[in-house]
Image (tube, rainbow, N blue to C red; front, side, top):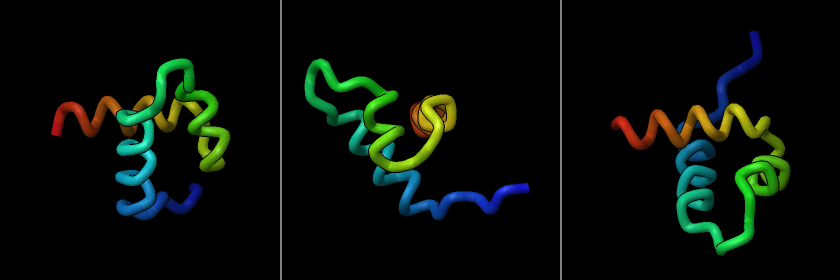
Length: 50
């Protein structure tokens, strides 16, 4: 099983994704940080429910 990403790393990416400029996709942000787009989507959903 892969090692989980640090909490601070996940929070940083979620913040970037929420504050992204118009036209910037989640796929681009995920690629920039080296995570899978689905992983980023899950983190965003989880952050919205917390």
